[in-house]
Length: 182
Image (tube, one colour):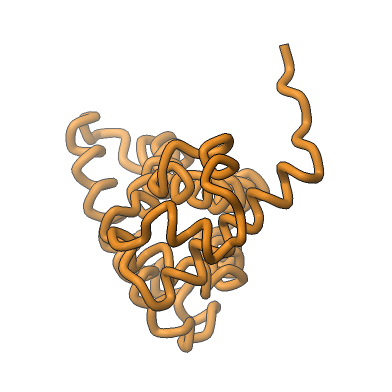
């Protein structure tokens, strides 16, 4: 059975809570943000908060889910024949459009966003890697992907934390070269 669509009131409440958490993260470490503090910032009753979320970590996961949905839509939009440069340009353009949000989320030690993005990317890249390196065992492909993913993720997180000052095309070219071994 399909889930009923959220009412405008529920959407509004969740939006206000998300924004309050993001506003608090600008000045307060995540582990110091309580439900009480969050509800005060959002002007929402604690009982209302608990209708939608179990705790602040659950709210953070909801925000991360929305970012992952955006990231996945960029991955799905990629043409199967696209060049690595096109792929990275598409991904970086999507990430740059959310750079302030991502900079906040990447700064949270308790956040799981980077790992979840890597897992999503792996789902899209494993077949391509196997096709490019048919003689490698599954175990070696796993090691190679882990190395490339961790390096690429660290580079992207650094780029976002620096305000995306390097042009997208230039960074896409670097990521393409690093990931393609050229």
